[in-house]
Image 1 (tube, one colour):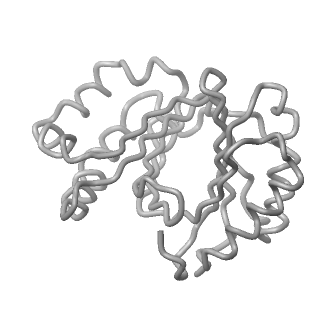
Image 2: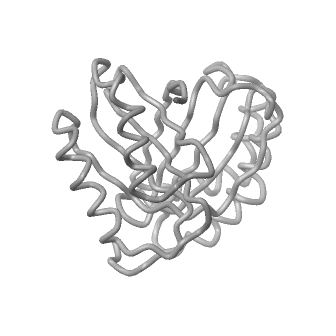
Length: 206
């Protein structure tokens, strides 16, 4: 990824962790929020117990042009404070899509993430599909609280689409599957590479 500055709306923290680390997550995020001078919005954290993966989003107060050195410095600081966390990475995220879902007033219980790199030359078509049909359609499904998509400018894959959900069953509901099964989807999805799909449990806020 480039060392140049990029528009940044949030910092993504990714780490390998165990359940016993969960008690430290709130402290870790608070430390990162202070270091990033993020005060307006609470951090959003999620954990996959089976795979031992921790993701957290620290939202900046306003979009800022950040150099990679900012993320690298924060990584080094947190690695010293929490040496037990494996493969700790911090990435600059640029928000390219965000909308409230059909269940916007509900509290998120699960956080579903789809990460991928489009095939060479396919980014415009993939972005058009994501932002015009796919994410607006999934956001309208009952059980979806919020749908957002980011560009990961440091530790890819490049595209990160995420959904806050009421339950895991939302993904298997007929309305959700109908959105996934469109003709446009069948043309775009084969253009995904390096695809990662992960379901997390949302961690309680501080």
